[in-house]
Image 1: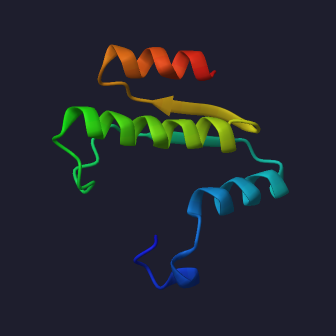
Image 2: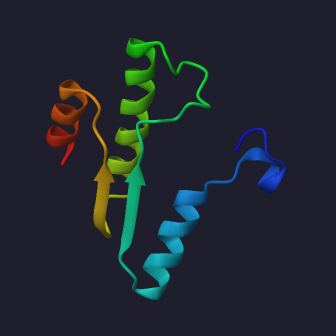
Length: 87
């Protein structure tokens, strides 16, 4: 979003969605895909795992309250173990 003109590059789509769902009393469902080929570190396993864990941590710490579902596709055992510890 930083490169987008929307909200001066400071927009947060997930936060807006979560707030709108909460305001309407609707449960929120989130999905995190491990296949983000647009990420510059994609292909560097260690760096990409760190990036993915950062995204997962943000979703689980900022938006898990009020979610009825968070789908996390894990592509490595250590990522799945990390997700289970965060829940």
